[in-house]
Length: 355
Image (tube, rainbow, N blue to C red; front, side):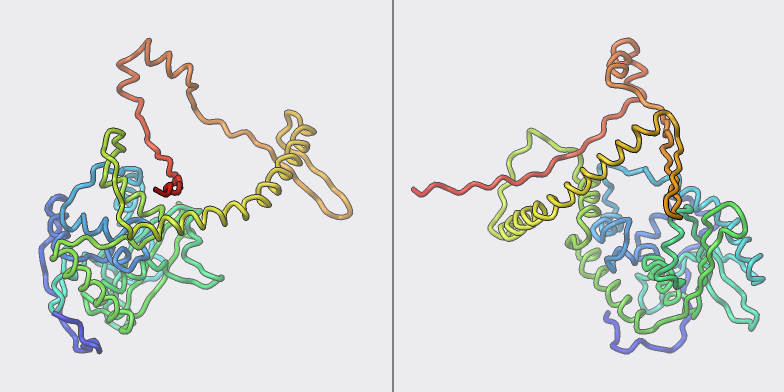
């Protein structure tokens, strides 16, 4: 199966993979593994801030991670729980009628392309659009603007364009709630882009056939932090008793480049360190004058300065008290204290002595 150089503009009717209304979550996840869903596309395109293409591959192959990362479960649950509310807000703001079809669809020509749509929208002219619902926090709302222009974040755009392709529908709306009232909501609209769609389908197909079906993990091409997160998730905790890994010669260029960048970093860090040191000194002198006060003001030549030095108080436990808890209440310690792991990366370079 190949994607044609010019995407077929003939209309199509999406096919139903499964009814989802009363489908248990485990079964729903099993059906999702049969293809590529809208939220998967950003990982394939290399624009997901959340996971790598390798993570997606593991998911489709049902390879469970060694370390389950549950840090975002609250945000994910909130998004799901608030879907109906956000839908009602969209309806109130636009006056458009919305409705659900609780089915998982797939593309008749590219059956690996799946779609599970939040809502459908009936427009005044009788045509149908799609609606994708999102929630975010107040500080992240800025991702929906770029240079003061309204945008859809790239990773959400990919999701919407995938849905339009599967459903053969030419418009999609996004409604993103970032606060707790009607005015703290973002509404965006995208129209179908066939050039984008053609490239997207090509890359989805390449991923599905050459990696998932061929059982060949895709290479890591993402940002370092995301790759390390993926490796830790699937490789597990460090094993100090594990044997030494011997790299082949292909790794030498990476090691050499890392050392080269490390030296460059040192040259940039020196002036930055000096600036930080001076800032800390001045900050300390200002704080010394404030004493226990949290606010200070200064007016000079028409310029007014307001300085705040507010306390941030959070529950904490000292190492001594933690040790005392361990010995005096071992059962409580064992139940509630978890051990986090971090690893220090270092390259030592040495030249071999001539024989």
